[in-house]
Image (cartoon, rainbow, N blue to C red; front, side, top):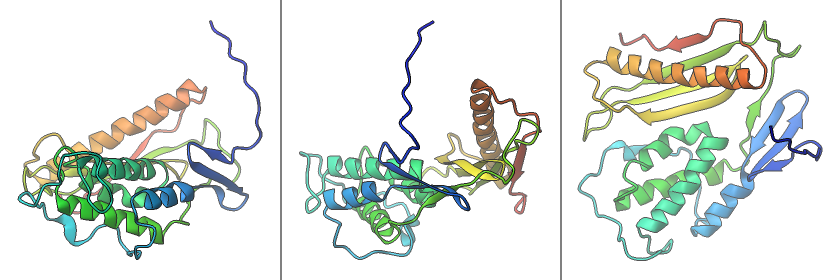
Length: 241
């Protein structure tokens, strides 16, 4: 067995572009201010006006819209496929790490990264403009008062789905939030791989996807020596069934 030597560097303040701050009342606060500002500067969006929402009237699929050119690296003034893919890559990283509020919008804009339209570029810029207006937003992670033990750790999941939301292939989109002891530790937003024939079927697929994520969290806790003894909880949306 290999032995690795570790060196303590104190309380973390930054890791992979994510800023960490600890507040005894709010817990850990995570932010990506510098990453967002760097992205805005890279794509010539530093001076654009902010918007209040990341997505709105762009929900219709513009299947016949103008394609972005595929020649060269491009620029913010003359975007190409590579320019679009680079911006979307930055948005994906931000959405995955600290910003669940843009998860659905980023999911929408990544559907056609292989042949994006001008409308996709506009949506990507709108998400970036939303991030500009919320650049100081922080993601809070706070453990329950009194700490956690194997007897009290609760793994929960919340799931939901639309029905045939994609007007091209009529596939539904699953969404979910993962929590440990009331603390959000993960989220998902993904298109389902098959066409659901009812809202109930779409919801069941979303439920199974969130359950799989919950089991992954339980396995991770087990690997670091924490056994979850309390039954897992899955909260589903049944209002349309």
